[in-house]
Length: 586
Ligand code: ASP
Image 1 (tube, protein in one colour):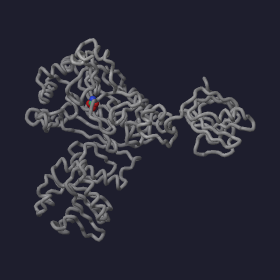
Image 2 (spheres, protein in one colour; image 1 turned 90 degrees about the vertical axis):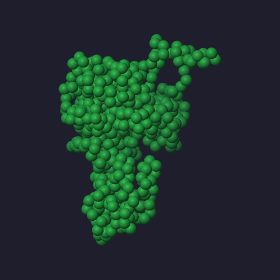
Image 3 (tube, helix red, strand yellow; image 1 turned 135 degrees about the vertical axis):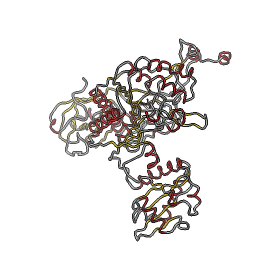
Image 4 (tube, helix red, strand yellow; image 1 turned 60 degrees about the vertical axis):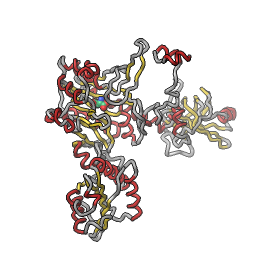
């Protein structure tokens, strides 16, 4: 090897040793008689020292080196006179007596240090330089540990990792597919998988019993901040299990990861139905690190002549502890905040519960002190607290109040990044009605089983059927989701019928799966986790991009390799993608 040690490992106990190190020149400092270089590799930084008096040739050579030159040095580990306690190697330096330039480097477009001067786009374009930074590299290391520990745990639980194909078939359900034109079959296309869903179910029919895969998935969705067209799932499926078995198995995975990767023990999982999540938090992924649950106030507040309440489908509120002292300005600002288009509330009603027991509200004209007191009793407000109420159409009001709750949680510092609140949200609706296309869509996917007790509603009131589906939520982030599956052909056929498929269409799209169900499909269920998101959560970052070695930007482009990009006319032709018009013209 070209080195005896790496740049992060030498300590005072190594003083006197002759060593060879390799790495990149991060920084050089010339101090008259001495030159110091910070040599960096994946493991850390070691200081190199060159002495003008004892070896002027070598010192001169060192002074000519540029940033990011790749060096090999031989020298002696020596105790430093001025130590740097912030660096693990800060007690020593290498007195260099041999210096080899392994490669030169152009001046990098941004500083490759903890604090960088490079903007987002520039660092994306030179991602390989950004990866040299400890900050970025440590995120990839975290990801590696997460993957390793996931494999360890699942392997111990008898899961086996099976690869499923990447060139599959386009289906109309779910998000939009990325497609790949076939050269050998003119006019036909493969699709890239949005998830290995049907394959993992077929593996269950194949008797694999416990499957997992850390797998790339592809969805051609409109881009939102922090969404990647390709992302990674921890995809899992099990046979002969109930929902409880699945939830327990993957609580186990979460606990294992918390302990092995974060060193956090004592993680507990709550359970909450979708209906309660919406009613009390206005979200199917509630952040339960803090309370501030919704209180519905309809019968208390309606019929008093306040139109906004009288005409509302729902009046609900939260209680912000200790906020009675909010100024006029703060309340106006909060009102404007809920009125932003993203939140969409019409207005905000506030009630201050003053320390002296009196109330001051924005609706004093309509409600007296006694009435406001009754609201306080209902919401659990105490002197010093502030009640915030929204009113309007039910779903929209819940959603807006949910956002307000999160905002107040943030303002009151209740969303501590080092606290973890984990839960399963269960019993999602099976179907979602779409006004535009006038049909039902599967809320999860069409293979999710309805709850047994709701199956009979499929014919009469399909919108009310609950699914045997669940999401894992940590600190308000949806980490994963799954379901118990349909495994009988007739029920699967019924499901496609409810989704508006003709029997022929269902057969054409999913005949392979329904046929498989006729050859002894075991009861099964599973889950998939957003691996990038889980890494980001553990890394304490908002962005999944940071945890992907070579991510796409917010417009779905890889600006480093410049993709997507046009292809050669010859290639187009081979793929049968050239239109007649183009052929005529070219
Ligand atoms: N395949 C599903 C998804 O990607 C997860 C599952 O049901 O296991 O959302």
